[in-house]
Image (tube, rainbow, N blue to C red; front, side, top):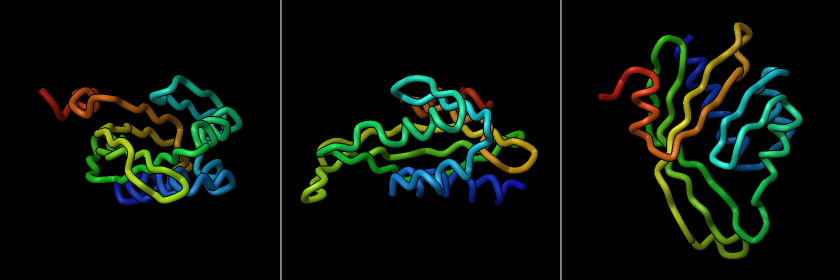
Length: 128
């Protein structure tokens, strides 16, 4: 189960990076809850709308650095990069984290993103 959850979280960010709406929404439970850095989104259609946000001249790209599993939840430490669309120049980078919860069928039920990775570690009981 832990490997399947890790694979699902990895696929979530792969689809995010490619802005692949069909693949992204196929990973989500119908009643998914996303708590992103730009606000909450409830349901597949709202999540698909979030996927398209901020993809003008600057393109977000998530680099998944490390994974931790605890009590069926998957925590991902991420380097979030913002690059120019035209030449891929790195404009900004930040360390963030995401905690995933999964439905019984393996789809993403909830994903909460944290600006501070230490807070995410605390949220799943791995930080002090």
